[in-house]
Image 1 (cartoon, rainbow, N blue to C red):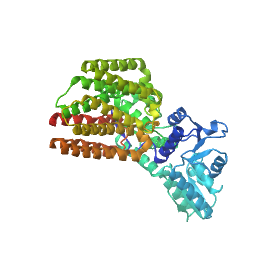
Image 2: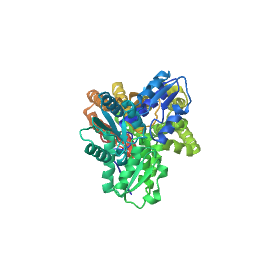
Image 3: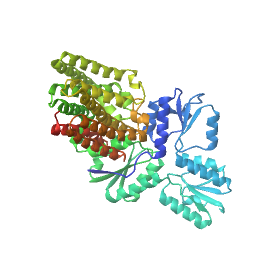
Image 4: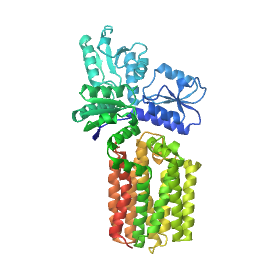
Length: 552
């Protein structure tokens, strides 16, 4: 079975903005946080909000204090004024594109125009826009509604931002034919247009279409409807578990799209479940990622590569200790912070819930084996391993997780660098070279961890205070990630100046990282498995270059 993903799917700009406002408020506000009605039309996203203490205001009675977030669909101005007068702190999560339609409705109403809105009269967005017409707006949902229109002279036609393009064109053309002289402003959001065209593109090449999203979402249902209009079997599912895998197995090529209220973690989950059907190797690769095996191997590769550069040899015991310490730290952290993990990687959290006992046992055995191997190296290595492993366990279990915003990637990069520094401390290279290499290791490690942190941010879940990507926010985090290869290049120049020209081969590593950064900026969807392995690949390229050009 081949799985193809639509060009654009999932959260639109307005929905993502509203969700991140809610997540930020939940994290930073000491007061209760509410939404004015369902923030978006997706039950799984709303369940996530409730897990972090964000509830629907209308179900909470009449609270006297707190923060209330206006949903992406917007609300009528009278309701917004009532919220402001209630004493609650109001955060306006109205989509900027919806706000533009509201502003147009108010402007034309004040200029004496009759405002006609093409959309669903029961939709929250349409009710909000109507509020800006001072009770004079008209709504047209279908051709039958045209019969109830009064005689129109000076009027303007606007659209619900999630309206179907073809329906808008047909209805507005018919209104103009009946009542010439009106103005038409197409206020359909570009994201809606792109998603609808994407479904039509998929229908041309795929035998069946899976649409991911809430059943109460108008734009999600419209995507499924378009697929059926294109004579394709269409399946609307809210979660991967709802996929009729046996029925879908008869199709050779399946297209996947999602409504504008669907978080990426659900889309990735559906794609992964479809792509993994009948492919045990893919499922194995996913489980290995859950167990942090490839992550620990990448840390061991960095240690091995640095040992080659500084010592000219590979030492099996230190490399194994580095692998085991990294496995212990990351797996223990996932076990102890499973509730937080469930807010950004729910399927990984569920894996840890189902296999908790064997995972705890394997984690403790890994730490015990690391201590045993460290003892074989030296008593000092044993003390170092015990101290570093204990520190990582304390970080997972205490308030150190929120010591300062964005600390987790920095702590992990430092953790990895300390392991490398300790086991290359007695290298025959000058102190300056060792220090420069340790700085290089920190940059290389931080790039990989921040890359994965951004992948988590792109999932549209809740990352918490310790996430550097969430603290910096998307664009700034990408800029920081893009600056790391440049910093690595400067360190490489310094190494070449202080050592030998062979170090310049490491520029290949930084060019490669630059390519990974450029690819990540495209925010590819439905490729989480591939991207996670890709994020770890610089460590293995570093080891490969070290094997070719090692030695001081």
